[in-house]
Picture (cartoon, rainbow, N blue to C red):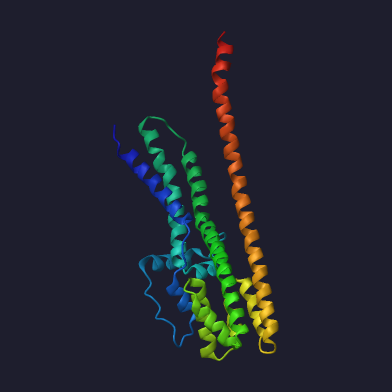
Amino acid sequence: MNLLPVVLSGGAIGAGAALLIRELLKAQPALGPALARTAPAAWALPAPQLDREEVWGRWLLARLGHLPGVRVPAVDLALLGQGSGQFMLKKTALAALGLLCPVIATIPWIIAGVGLPFYVPAGAGLLVAGLLFVTPDLAIRDQARRAREEFAHALSAYLDLVALKRAADAGPAEALEKAAQVGEGWPFLYLQGALRRARLEKIPPYQALTDLAHAYELPVLTDVADIMRGSATDGAAVYQALRARTAALNTELLAAQAAEANTASEKMTAPGALLAVLVMLLMAFPAVIRMLTV
């Protein structure tokens, strides 16, 4: 018996599973593209050369982007530092793999002499291709949500630092910039780039923070910008507003973490109940068989 079709089908299914697992893994935002986006043109870092995957993906996006159901989450991709071309290439590759896997899986059946109608692998291929085509969208949405949560945690610490700087009689722009320079994570790099842009373009720092919040859909940063708008009049009031916003933000983050933990616990209830039912069936199976055979 020729084992080549079996090996090919197993390899195709394994490659699809590996791609699916890779898409679902959490990815850290790329810092280079993030700094390049938040920097003004006068001092921006040189744009990196497009790799082959990005070029092919943009070629596909130019030809498939107008089709219904094809949507590129530009804001989420920008927040994560990923290119739209690579995103489109992953979607297309997964869809093509979904079309091929059912067809390849039917080869051993054909070799064994079991005939299948053509519409069975074709329908299964379309279904699997559709599911795999939307998988990158779900993965990017989850990664962007986690990135915004991480930014909110970093912003909580940033608000405390700004409040301390304002309590030490630092100016609004000075307090924002010095507090941003303390951190080293990617949220602080985003803040540093926005504030540096504000200083070079001679615009208010709270305006740069507002632009950053709108560009990456960070509503929690908009609150900080609104608070700092009134910092030129009363530093003590701004200090109290910053501390109050920090306390409220910490409460929101703790509530979100508790809700996520409850959701995870509820998801484990069904598998545990199913396992208990299976154990009970296994324990009762010999007695039932004995009763039926008597």
